[in-house]
Each structure stands twice: as C-alpha cells, then as structure tokens.
Length: 339
Image (tube, rainbow, N blue to C red; front, side, top):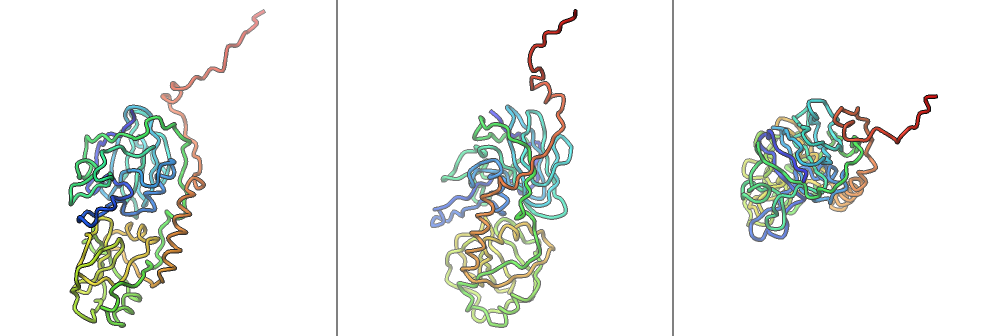
C-alpha cells in the first residue's frame, strides 16, 4: 500500500479534510482548510472528492518520502518552493512520486499555506465523521496534533493509477491586491456611520496575532455606536468581530462556535482563501458588497474550481535509470539474416 512518511514537518502542518459539520451545537467547530480554493484544486487535479483529506502545510514547510507503491500527488497554494529529490518543481503541480523519492516544500516569496493531496485522500481514522485536525480540541488527523517526523500517512486508494505529470495553471491560484469583499451584518448597527466609512476606506495590517482561529488586523479604530458586548450568538466562517479595542478580527477555520462581540460583517467566501494566504505585516483593504453579489462570486468560484482538470498543462520529465528499469524497452524479437 502506498504511503507518505514524514521526514520533517514544521509547526502548523496538519491533516485537513473539507470540515467536520453538524457538531457546532456541542461546541465542535468544523476546522477544515484555511484556503478552501487551493485545497479543492489539489484534490480535483487528482480526481478526488472535493473534501478528501490532504496535508495543509504552513510556513514551517515539510519533507516527505514515498514508500510502498508509486503514489499520485498534487500540490498548490501560495508561492511555496517545491522540490523532488532536491530538484525544483512548479509551485502548483500533479505528479507521481515513486517509492524512495522525496518531496519537500518550503515557503517562497508569498502565501501562508500550501496543500498536498494524494490519490484517494489520506486515510487517517475519522473522528465524528471527519479527518480534519482541530488541535485545540485534539480531534482528527493524527491524535488531533500537528504532523511530525516519523508519521506515516496511508493513501485511501492504493490502486489509483499514475497520471500524466502536469503543472496546475489555474488562474484562481494567483493572488491579487484587490480589496476583500465584505457583506454587512448582522450587528452593523452597533457601529457608527463614520466607523463603517473608515472600515471601508482605510488600510489594515495583519498582526502577528494570526492563526487558524482568527486573523487580527491593526489600523484606525472602528468606533462602536453602543456597548461592544452582545448576547453571545453563532459565529460563521469569515465573521468580522470588533472588540473593545476597536480592531477588526476575522474568524477563520478554527473559529469558536459562539461569540459575544458585535460582528460588523462577513468576508465573502470567494475571498477567504486569498485572505488566509496573507502573512503578518502585509496590508489590505475591504470593500462592501451585497449578499447576492457575494453569493454569485462564490458560485463562479465553485464553477471555476470544478474545471481544474482543464487547467492542467502536461510537463515532460527526463526518465531516470530507475524509470528505464521499470519499463520493457524491447518491442519484440527481430530475426536477422546474417547471410
């Protein structure tokens, strides 16, 4: 059975699937990928289900070795620097890793997360119906923890055939500097009109208080019209809370199920992956859109990602001696007449 053995894993690297749902009433958040677009792209490049378990790689990077049989893989997300056996690869690619070959990733000039999917998904033990790692609750993945050297990650579909190696040239993986789109509500009335105008006109900087639970931004104070405490209510992915310090806080994949600070709005799902790829110190702006506009942007994004296979550009790889030994180079028997 093919598997990946972890040789090195930096902090923050975990197993994530599409998320663990239906348990928020019990205080269990879905978890799942920080950049859902890159996560799905890696899975779709292999023909996997959209929510198949994959490796989410943070800025600490990772190095793995293939063991057992050959294993088709796909990776993308952020401008990470990938290498196979020490040789550079594109930052978004589908390939087949042979037994004994190594694959490594380290952060490049931009991006905070990369995703490595395997054919059929990673077959760790499901917990509450999902494999997503939630380290605060010690759920999912490998005992609810980050990956570490020595871990062995089995593939769920060992019979998956090797595929043509190809670069993933998907336009949605390119990150731009356009403002993140925000839908107002549900507590926008807790902020003054001037505060809302400031939020949608000012520049904000991501602080070092940024993790899978929330991204805290620094910038001009967003003034409350009333008290900054509310009766705790449900929290959705992308919610923008503003506590007493007047600084916006965007709730991310490991967000709490409920919260008691007013929510100015929600980042549109179509922009959440791009926001997740920010690094501390980088700046951004926000723009206002309607719920209908946010929904249309999300559906367009879903439709584009579903066509990932159309954006695969085959790459030519020079065969190694090991490759040549694995194939039959003779095409038949030739009868030579020496007379």
